[in-house]
Amino acid sequence: MTPTLRGRLQTRLFLAATVGVLWTAIISPFLPEPPGVTTGMSYSMAFDSLLLMAVYGLVWEHLYHRLQQRRWDRDWPSVFALLTVLNEALLVWLLDHLFPVMSGPMPGMSGSSLANAGSLGLDSPYLAGFVVHMGTTWGLMWLFGQGPMRVIFVRWRFEGGLIVHSHVPDSAVPGDRPAISRPEGAGTSEAGVRDAVPGTAAARLTLRPHTGLARVNGNPTSASSGDLVEGNMCDHGHFGHPGMRYCMICGGPLPQLNGTRVLGRRPPLGVLILDDGVTHVLDGDVRLAEADGPGPLTAGHRDEIPAASALADIRLAGWQPFVSSELHPIALALPGGGDLHIAPGASARLMPGTEFTVAARRIRYESPYQPVEPASATADPYAGAVSEADAATSPAAATPSRPAPQVRHTLRG
Image (cartoon, rainbow, N blue to C red; front, side, top):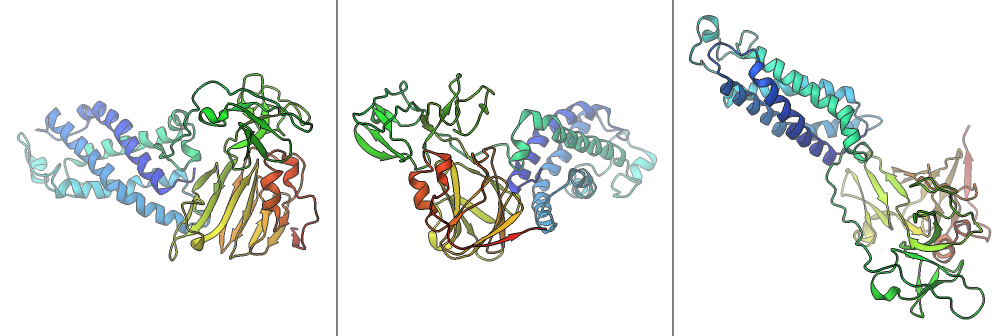
Protein backbone atom coordinates (compact mmCIF):
# COMPACT_ATOMS: atom_id res chain seq x y z
CA MET A 1 0.00 0.00 0.00
CA THR A 2 1.15 3.54 -0.75
CA PRO A 3 -0.27 5.56 2.16
CA THR A 4 -1.54 9.10 1.84
CA LEU A 5 -1.27 11.61 4.66
CA ARG A 6 -4.97 11.43 5.51
CA GLY A 7 -4.81 7.67 5.33
CA ARG A 8 -1.84 7.61 7.69
CA LEU A 9 -3.60 9.75 10.28
CA GLN A 10 -6.85 7.81 10.10
CA THR A 11 -5.11 4.43 10.31
CA ARG A 12 -2.97 5.56 13.25
CA LEU A 13 -5.98 6.72 15.29
CA PHE A 14 -8.06 3.67 14.38
CA LEU A 15 -5.39 1.14 15.37
CA ALA A 16 -4.60 2.97 18.61
CA ALA A 17 -8.29 3.22 19.56
CA THR A 18 -9.03 -0.44 18.83
CA VAL A 19 -6.04 -2.77 18.95
CA GLY A 20 -4.02 -0.51 21.25
CA VAL A 21 -6.78 0.02 23.80
CA LEU A 22 -7.83 -3.64 23.84
CA TRP A 23 -4.30 -5.00 24.25
CA THR A 24 -3.38 -2.41 26.91
CA ALA A 25 -6.43 -3.41 28.93
CA ILE A 26 -5.35 -7.06 28.73
CA ILE A 27 -1.63 -6.78 29.40
CA SER A 28 -1.44 -3.96 31.99
CA PRO A 29 -1.92 -6.20 35.10
CA PHE A 30 0.90 -8.49 33.92
CA LEU A 31 3.55 -5.88 33.15
CA PRO A 32 6.85 -6.23 35.10
CA GLU A 33 6.42 -3.11 37.20
CA PRO A 34 8.62 -2.25 40.24
CA PRO A 35 7.46 -2.94 43.79
CA GLY A 36 4.84 -0.52 45.06
CA VAL A 37 3.08 -0.09 41.69
CA THR A 38 -0.52 -1.23 42.04
CA THR A 39 -2.70 -2.57 39.26
CA GLY A 40 -4.47 0.77 39.00
CA MET A 41 -1.17 2.60 38.67
CA SER A 42 -0.06 0.14 36.00
CA TYR A 43 -3.25 0.77 34.02
CA SER A 44 -2.81 4.53 34.37
CA MET A 45 0.80 4.51 33.18
CA ALA A 46 0.08 2.15 30.28
CA PHE A 47 -2.92 4.09 28.95
CA ASP A 48 -1.13 7.42 29.36
CA SER A 49 1.78 6.06 27.31
CA LEU A 50 -0.64 4.80 24.65
CA LEU A 51 -2.29 8.22 24.49
CA LEU A 52 1.06 9.96 24.07
CA MET A 53 2.00 7.49 21.33
CA ALA A 54 -1.25 8.16 19.44
CA VAL A 55 -1.22 11.97 19.77
CA TYR A 56 2.44 12.60 19.07
CA GLY A 57 2.32 9.90 16.45
CA LEU A 58 0.22 12.26 14.33
CA VAL A 59 3.24 14.56 14.20
CA TRP A 60 5.46 11.62 13.27
CA GLU A 61 3.11 10.74 10.41
CA HIS A 62 3.65 14.16 8.83
CA LEU A 63 7.40 13.55 8.94
CA TYR A 64 7.02 10.03 7.53
CA HIS A 65 4.90 11.37 4.69
CA ARG A 66 7.54 13.96 3.77
CA LEU A 67 10.23 11.29 3.79
CA GLN A 68 8.02 9.07 1.63
CA GLN A 69 7.72 11.81 -1.00
CA ARG A 70 11.52 11.96 -1.25
CA ARG A 71 11.89 8.25 -1.96
CA TRP A 72 12.34 7.29 -5.60
CA ASP A 73 9.14 5.24 -5.74
CA ARG A 74 7.19 7.37 -3.23
CA ASP A 75 6.32 4.19 -1.37
CA TRP A 76 6.52 3.26 2.32
CA PRO A 77 7.35 -0.43 2.84
CA SER A 78 5.65 -2.15 5.77
CA VAL A 79 9.00 -2.92 7.39
CA PHE A 80 9.51 0.84 7.77
CA ALA A 81 6.26 1.04 9.72
CA LEU A 82 7.50 -1.75 12.00
CA LEU A 83 10.93 -0.20 12.65
CA THR A 84 9.58 3.25 13.48
CA VAL A 85 8.69 1.88 16.91
CA LEU A 86 12.32 2.60 17.88
CA ASN A 87 12.18 6.37 17.46
CA GLU A 88 8.57 6.68 18.61
CA ALA A 89 9.10 4.62 21.76
CA LEU A 90 12.13 6.73 22.64
CA LEU A 91 10.06 9.92 22.37
CA VAL A 92 7.23 8.45 24.46
CA TRP A 93 9.77 7.33 27.09
CA LEU A 94 11.08 10.91 27.37
CA LEU A 95 7.55 12.35 27.50
CA ASP A 96 6.55 9.86 30.20
CA HIS A 97 9.23 11.34 32.44
CA LEU A 98 8.59 14.92 31.38
CA PHE A 99 4.91 15.14 32.29
CA PRO A 100 5.50 12.86 34.43
CA VAL A 101 3.67 9.63 33.78
CA MET A 102 6.05 7.07 35.23
CA SER A 103 8.79 8.85 37.18
CA GLY A 104 9.43 9.40 40.84
CA PRO A 105 9.25 7.06 43.82
CA MET A 106 6.17 5.01 44.61
CA PRO A 107 5.03 3.86 48.07
CA GLY A 108 6.65 0.52 48.81
CA MET A 109 9.82 1.12 46.76
CA SER A 110 13.16 0.46 48.39
CA GLY A 111 16.81 0.02 47.53
CA SER A 112 17.89 0.55 43.93
CA SER A 113 14.30 0.93 42.68
CA LEU A 114 13.79 3.90 44.96
CA ALA A 115 17.16 5.41 44.05
CA ASN A 116 16.61 5.10 40.29
CA ALA A 117 12.91 5.95 40.22
CA GLY A 118 13.53 9.16 38.25
CA SER A 119 16.19 7.81 35.93
CA LEU A 120 15.92 7.87 32.16
CA GLY A 121 18.62 5.25 31.67
CA LEU A 122 18.70 1.48 31.57
CA ASP A 123 18.62 1.28 35.38
CA SER A 124 15.11 2.79 35.58
CA PRO A 125 12.71 0.43 37.39
CA TYR A 126 9.94 1.36 34.93
CA LEU A 127 11.90 0.47 31.79
CA ALA A 128 11.05 -3.24 31.66
CA GLY A 129 7.29 -2.68 31.85
CA PHE A 130 7.49 0.14 29.31
CA VAL A 131 9.44 -1.95 26.79
CA VAL A 132 7.08 -4.92 27.10
CA HIS A 133 3.98 -2.74 26.76
CA MET A 134 5.16 -0.57 23.86
CA GLY A 135 6.83 -3.43 21.96
CA THR A 136 3.88 -5.81 22.09
CA THR A 137 1.30 -3.09 21.44
CA TRP A 138 3.16 -1.78 18.41
CA GLY A 139 3.76 -5.28 17.07
CA LEU A 140 0.09 -6.22 17.33
CA MET A 141 -0.99 -2.97 15.67
CA TRP A 142 1.43 -3.63 12.82
CA LEU A 143 0.27 -7.23 12.40
CA PHE A 144 -3.37 -6.13 12.41
CA GLY A 145 -2.60 -3.69 9.60
CA GLN A 146 -0.94 -6.45 7.56
CA GLY A 147 -3.86 -8.88 7.71
CA PRO A 148 -7.22 -8.30 9.43
CA MET A 149 -7.29 -4.62 8.47
CA ARG A 150 -7.33 -5.58 4.79
CA VAL A 151 -10.24 -7.95 5.37
CA ILE A 152 -12.40 -5.59 7.42
CA PHE A 153 -11.79 -2.63 5.11
CA VAL A 154 -11.47 -4.17 1.67
CA ARG A 155 -10.67 -0.90 -0.10
CA TRP A 156 -8.34 0.37 2.67
CA ARG A 157 -5.04 -0.48 1.00
CA PHE A 158 -6.26 0.66 -2.42
CA GLU A 159 -7.21 4.10 -1.12
CA GLY A 160 -4.02 5.06 0.68
CA GLY A 161 -5.15 3.92 4.14
CA LEU A 162 -8.37 5.94 4.22
CA ILE A 163 -11.05 4.56 6.52
CA VAL A 164 -13.57 7.43 6.54
CA HIS A 165 -14.52 8.96 3.19
CA SER A 166 -16.12 12.31 2.52
CA HIS A 167 -17.63 11.16 -0.78
CA VAL A 168 -21.42 11.51 -0.83
CA PRO A 169 -22.98 8.75 -2.94
CA ASP A 170 -25.57 9.49 -5.54
CA SER A 171 -29.07 9.64 -4.14
CA ALA A 172 -31.41 6.85 -5.06
CA VAL A 173 -33.97 7.51 -7.72
CA PRO A 174 -37.47 7.46 -6.25
CA GLY A 175 -40.12 5.30 -7.75
CA ASP A 176 -40.04 2.32 -10.03
CA ARG A 177 -38.14 2.00 -13.27
CA PRO A 178 -39.70 4.42 -15.76
CA ALA A 179 -41.73 3.19 -18.65
CA ILE A 180 -40.19 2.84 -22.09
CA SER A 181 -41.75 4.04 -25.31
CA ARG A 182 -40.77 3.91 -28.97
CA PRO A 183 -41.36 7.08 -30.94
CA GLU A 184 -42.70 6.94 -34.43
CA GLY A 185 -40.24 6.59 -37.26
CA ALA A 186 -37.39 4.33 -38.19
CA GLY A 187 -33.95 4.21 -36.74
CA THR A 188 -34.93 4.13 -33.07
CA SER A 189 -34.57 1.42 -30.47
CA GLU A 190 -36.00 0.90 -27.05
CA ALA A 191 -33.73 1.59 -24.11
CA GLY A 192 -34.27 0.55 -20.52
CA VAL A 193 -33.39 3.03 -17.83
CA ARG A 194 -31.65 1.94 -14.64
CA ASP A 195 -31.25 4.59 -11.97
CA ALA A 196 -30.78 7.11 -14.71
CA VAL A 197 -33.24 10.01 -14.70
CA PRO A 198 -34.52 11.42 -11.41
CA GLY A 199 -38.09 12.27 -10.60
CA THR A 200 -41.05 12.37 -12.88
CA ALA A 201 -38.97 13.61 -15.81
CA ALA A 202 -38.16 9.98 -16.57
CA ALA A 203 -41.71 9.03 -17.37
CA ARG A 204 -40.88 8.45 -21.02
CA LEU A 205 -37.35 8.04 -22.40
CA THR A 206 -36.01 6.66 -25.66
CA LEU A 207 -32.50 6.54 -27.11
CA ARG A 208 -31.41 6.95 -30.70
CA PRO A 209 -28.51 4.56 -31.36
CA HIS A 210 -25.04 6.09 -31.92
CA THR A 211 -26.27 9.66 -31.50
CA GLY A 212 -25.86 10.21 -27.76
CA LEU A 213 -29.28 11.84 -27.65
CA ALA A 214 -32.18 10.68 -25.50
CA ARG A 215 -35.72 11.96 -25.49
CA VAL A 216 -37.36 12.61 -22.14
CA ASN A 217 -41.07 13.33 -22.40
CA GLY A 218 -40.55 14.13 -26.06
CA ASN A 219 -37.75 16.65 -25.44
CA PRO A 220 -34.23 15.82 -26.63
CA THR A 221 -31.54 15.71 -23.99
CA SER A 222 -27.90 14.64 -24.00
CA ALA A 223 -26.93 11.24 -22.71
CA SER A 224 -23.22 11.90 -23.00
CA SER A 225 -22.81 14.03 -19.86
CA GLY A 226 -21.20 11.19 -17.94
CA ASP A 227 -24.38 9.90 -16.31
CA LEU A 228 -26.45 8.18 -18.96
CA VAL A 229 -24.64 5.72 -21.18
CA GLU A 230 -25.60 2.78 -23.34
CA GLY A 231 -24.64 -0.63 -21.96
CA ASN A 232 -25.71 -4.17 -21.24
CA MET A 233 -27.57 -5.69 -18.34
CA CYS A 234 -27.13 -9.21 -17.01
CA ASP A 235 -29.96 -11.49 -15.89
CA HIS A 236 -29.53 -10.23 -12.31
CA GLY A 237 -30.09 -6.61 -13.28
CA HIS A 238 -26.47 -5.41 -13.08
CA PHE A 239 -25.65 -2.65 -15.56
CA GLY A 240 -22.27 -2.90 -17.26
CA HIS A 241 -19.97 -2.00 -20.11
CA PRO A 242 -21.35 -3.01 -23.54
CA GLY A 243 -18.02 -4.57 -24.54
CA MET A 244 -17.76 -6.91 -21.56
CA ARG A 245 -18.68 -10.57 -22.00
CA TYR A 246 -19.35 -11.25 -18.34
CA CYS A 247 -20.83 -9.18 -15.53
CA MET A 248 -18.16 -7.76 -13.22
CA ILE A 249 -20.46 -8.09 -10.21
CA CYS A 250 -21.96 -11.56 -10.46
CA GLY A 251 -20.00 -13.10 -13.34
CA GLY A 252 -23.11 -13.79 -15.39
CA PRO A 253 -23.01 -13.61 -19.21
CA LEU A 254 -23.81 -10.31 -20.88
CA PRO A 255 -25.37 -9.73 -24.31
CA GLN A 256 -22.73 -9.27 -26.98
CA LEU A 257 -22.20 -6.20 -29.14
CA ASN A 258 -25.24 -6.92 -31.31
CA GLY A 259 -27.50 -7.65 -28.34
CA THR A 260 -30.13 -5.48 -26.71
CA ARG A 261 -28.75 -2.30 -25.20
CA VAL A 262 -30.13 -0.42 -22.22
CA LEU A 263 -29.55 3.08 -20.95
CA GLY A 264 -28.20 3.35 -17.43
CA ARG A 265 -26.04 5.30 -15.03
CA ARG A 266 -22.37 4.85 -15.79
CA PRO A 267 -20.26 3.39 -12.97
CA PRO A 268 -16.78 4.81 -12.22
CA LEU A 269 -14.48 4.06 -15.15
CA GLY A 270 -11.30 3.58 -13.12
CA VAL A 271 -8.77 5.52 -11.06
CA LEU A 272 -6.11 8.14 -11.64
CA ILE A 273 -2.90 7.45 -9.71
CA LEU A 274 -1.15 10.77 -9.12
CA ASP A 275 2.61 11.13 -8.81
CA ASP A 276 2.47 11.18 -4.99
CA GLY A 277 0.55 7.91 -4.83
CA VAL A 278 -2.87 9.45 -4.21
CA THR A 279 -5.70 7.85 -6.17
CA HIS A 280 -8.70 9.66 -7.57
CA VAL A 281 -11.80 7.76 -8.68
CA LEU A 282 -12.71 8.69 -12.24
CA ASP A 283 -16.48 9.03 -11.94
CA GLY A 284 -16.85 12.31 -13.83
CA ASP A 285 -14.93 15.04 -15.63
CA VAL A 286 -11.71 15.77 -13.72
CA ARG A 287 -9.38 18.74 -13.71
CA LEU A 288 -5.75 18.44 -12.57
CA ALA A 289 -4.11 21.48 -10.99
CA GLU A 290 -0.89 22.23 -9.13
CA ALA A 291 -0.68 24.29 -5.98
CA ASP A 292 1.52 27.38 -5.88
CA GLY A 293 5.13 26.25 -5.70
CA PRO A 294 6.22 22.64 -5.13
CA GLY A 295 3.44 20.59 -3.67
CA PRO A 296 1.00 17.76 -4.30
CA LEU A 297 -1.11 17.58 -7.41
CA THR A 298 -4.78 18.33 -6.94
CA ALA A 299 -7.56 16.46 -8.72
CA GLY A 300 -11.16 17.61 -8.59
CA HIS A 301 -14.28 18.15 -10.64
CA ARG A 302 -13.88 20.59 -13.50
CA ASP A 303 -16.35 23.06 -12.04
CA GLU A 304 -14.43 23.18 -8.73
CA ILE A 305 -11.00 24.22 -10.11
CA PRO A 306 -10.51 27.40 -12.18
CA ALA A 307 -9.44 26.83 -15.75
CA ALA A 308 -6.56 29.30 -15.35
CA SER A 309 -4.78 27.01 -12.88
CA ALA A 310 -5.49 23.75 -14.73
CA LEU A 311 -2.67 21.51 -15.90
CA ALA A 312 -4.91 19.04 -17.73
CA ASP A 313 -8.54 18.01 -18.11
CA ILE A 314 -9.90 14.47 -18.27
CA ARG A 315 -13.32 14.40 -19.91
CA LEU A 316 -15.56 11.36 -20.00
CA ALA A 317 -17.49 10.67 -23.18
CA GLY A 318 -19.60 7.58 -22.80
CA TRP A 319 -17.27 4.86 -21.53
CA GLN A 320 -14.11 6.57 -22.79
CA PRO A 321 -11.91 9.15 -20.99
CA PHE A 322 -10.01 11.77 -22.99
CA VAL A 323 -7.07 13.85 -21.73
CA SER A 324 -6.16 17.32 -22.97
CA SER A 325 -4.38 20.47 -21.87
CA GLU A 326 -4.82 23.99 -23.15
CA LEU A 327 -1.39 25.18 -21.99
CA HIS A 328 0.99 22.22 -21.86
CA PRO A 329 2.01 19.42 -24.22
CA ILE A 330 1.24 15.91 -22.98
CA ALA A 331 3.46 12.85 -23.36
CA LEU A 332 1.68 9.49 -23.13
CA ALA A 333 3.36 6.16 -22.44
CA LEU A 334 0.99 3.67 -24.07
CA PRO A 335 0.35 0.24 -22.52
CA GLY A 336 1.40 -1.39 -25.80
CA GLY A 337 4.94 -0.07 -25.48
CA GLY A 338 4.89 3.13 -27.55
CA ASP A 339 4.99 6.84 -26.81
CA LEU A 340 2.58 9.49 -28.01
CA HIS A 341 3.08 13.27 -27.85
CA ILE A 342 0.19 15.68 -28.31
CA ALA A 343 0.29 19.45 -28.57
CA PRO A 344 -1.63 21.88 -26.34
CA GLY A 345 -5.29 21.96 -27.28
CA ALA A 346 -5.32 18.43 -28.67
CA SER A 347 -6.90 15.47 -26.91
CA ALA A 348 -6.09 11.78 -26.72
CA ARG A 349 -7.92 8.71 -25.58
CA LEU A 350 -6.78 7.13 -22.32
CA MET A 351 -6.50 3.36 -22.38
CA PRO A 352 -6.13 1.31 -19.18
CA GLY A 353 -2.49 1.30 -18.13
CA THR A 354 -1.61 4.55 -19.91
CA GLU A 355 0.78 6.92 -18.15
CA PHE A 356 0.83 10.55 -19.22
CA THR A 357 3.16 13.38 -18.24
CA VAL A 358 2.12 17.02 -18.21
CA ALA A 359 4.27 19.82 -16.78
CA ALA A 360 6.70 17.25 -15.27
CA ARG A 361 3.83 15.58 -13.35
CA ARG A 362 3.23 11.89 -14.14
CA ILE A 363 -0.23 10.35 -13.80
CA ARG A 364 -1.37 6.78 -14.48
CA TYR A 365 -4.83 5.65 -15.53
CA GLU A 366 -6.06 2.21 -14.53
CA SER A 367 -9.43 0.70 -15.37
CA PRO A 368 -11.04 -2.75 -15.48
CA TYR A 369 -12.73 -1.81 -18.76
CA GLN A 370 -10.57 -2.82 -21.69
CA PRO A 371 -11.22 -1.30 -25.12
CA VAL A 372 -13.55 -3.22 -27.39
CA GLU A 373 -10.99 -3.21 -30.20
CA PRO A 374 -7.26 -2.99 -29.53
CA ALA A 375 -6.10 0.43 -30.57
CA SER A 376 -3.60 2.98 -29.42
CA ALA A 377 -4.56 6.42 -28.18
CA THR A 378 -5.61 8.77 -30.91
CA ALA A 379 -4.38 12.35 -30.78
CA ASP A 380 -7.18 14.30 -32.37
CA PRO A 381 -7.94 17.90 -31.51
CA TYR A 382 -11.58 17.14 -32.33
CA ALA A 383 -11.76 13.80 -30.55
CA GLY A 384 -13.73 15.34 -27.72
CA ALA A 385 -16.35 16.70 -30.07
CA VAL A 386 -16.76 13.33 -31.77
CA SER A 387 -16.94 11.44 -28.50
CA GLU A 388 -19.61 13.71 -27.12
CA ALA A 389 -22.01 12.17 -29.63
CA ASP A 390 -20.67 8.78 -30.57
CA ALA A 391 -18.69 7.49 -27.60
CA ALA A 392 -21.68 7.96 -25.31
CA THR A 393 -23.57 5.19 -27.07
CA SER A 394 -20.91 3.03 -28.69
CA PRO A 395 -17.44 2.22 -27.35
CA ALA A 396 -16.21 1.41 -30.82
CA ALA A 397 -17.34 4.82 -31.99
CA ALA A 398 -15.10 6.53 -29.46
CA THR A 399 -12.32 6.36 -32.06
CA PRO A 400 -12.82 9.10 -34.67
CA SER A 401 -13.41 7.76 -38.15
CA ARG A 402 -11.47 10.51 -39.93
CA PRO A 403 -7.66 10.41 -40.11
CA ALA A 404 -5.83 11.72 -37.10
CA PRO A 405 -3.44 14.69 -37.42
CA GLN A 406 0.28 14.11 -37.63
CA VAL A 407 1.77 13.08 -34.27
CA ARG A 408 5.17 11.81 -33.27
CA HIS A 409 5.35 8.15 -32.21
CA THR A 410 8.38 6.68 -30.50
CA LEU A 411 8.51 2.92 -30.09
CA ARG A 412 10.34 1.62 -27.04
CA GLY A 413 13.16 -0.89 -27.26
